Image (cartoon, rainbow, N blue to C red; front, side, top):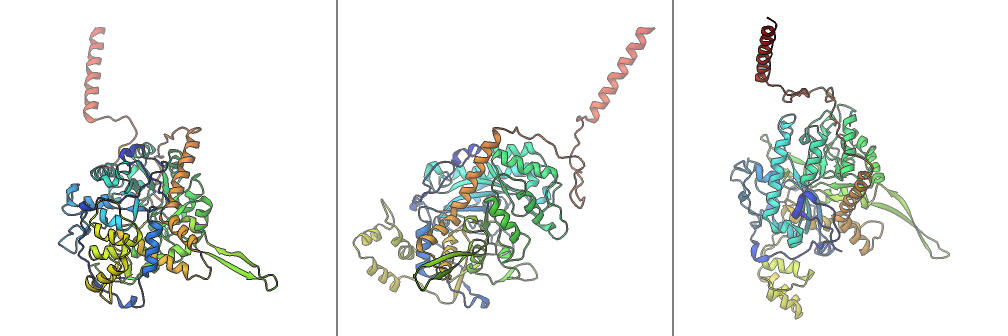
Length: 556
């Protein structure tokens, strides 16, 4: 199965395009294969957790090979800006190094990048929405300016790495998403300009309430969702072909948006509230609306949204222990997507009748939005199946594909062709590989997607309903990329329909619109009257005085 790609060479015209094979082998001579593996004692609370079996992990790689993961949210552009020293110098992070050096001070965040090209290759990442983000402290001030700065960072990052440009290498399709409606400055005109710059989804708000939309922080404080202007925002997004993202918004905003849109929505990095009762997650009644809308919930990996109260911090806010595993992430996927069937076999005819017993919304509405580079606490994967060196890579990866052309694994490829693989594997396993019991690694970077899918595969194989291997392969591929691609395609189809009958909306937000708690003041904004400076008024008075003098003189 090939993955739909995006022509990222021209972000301004980035669209869902027919079919580009985005799987290709990266130039291994340019990639570092050295990794300083951070080994931690597995927390006592996870002593019974086991990593996915080799069989499940092999299946995960097999199902993702040539298909890939399309992740809904990654904050790499923000890491470039915030990694000390704070600036927008792209040379701070070498994305061709597997794990670039991090901050020397452990109390400074971000420590390093959870996203590099070698890690993305291992994780089967084939498309990414790069987040354009600036904090709510800039709301009603210079948020639009900072958004433009971060778009510039993202565009320069993409242009610098051929692997992020599909027509050049077919590696990682790159698209931008705007994480927070405060960055449009309450202007539909600005929203349209962001679309022209290549933004293809907008999170309606981040952590702040706006005059036209409420955030998840207001979930227990008000029943206000979208204002009349907020409805105009989502309708204009539908007309343009920009995906409406409902992560970070209040439950009422979710319901209001889903009641007014005419195209599918996405939750770029959220999970199921029934599993983790956090306002950033999606309630079950809203999940039903997502099914009706044909949208997608892209399950987040950040520990704080995966399981409430499972991360322990010290008095300085530093993480002490994470009692969350990849199984907990899979719990959210299964809650949203799992279909329970019941079967009855007639004793007379031996015919088995299978009927649907329960379905929350189904596998067509689950995706992946891990939130890498935007958080630091992620679930453990257990005794990590990690690549210690090229021999470890050989043991795990070579059986999944045949290498072609020059490669640092040329000898191994020949062994594979000669049928000597098992003997060589036994040799390397006996002599070259370090196996450490009782140690754990967390799903801390973009190489971890197969680990999570490996756990999902194990869980589906052990479910009461007997899934065939084809069923499980289809579920993995739908979650990995097919579902978000379907949403994007349907959004563009609806935009084509709307653009044939509706003009762009020029409406201004009403001047008397306020946040639900009336906290906004517009103190840093000018009004809509003719912009008149003090010296203009002085000059006008001087001209008027001269005119009056001449008029009087002519009458004498």
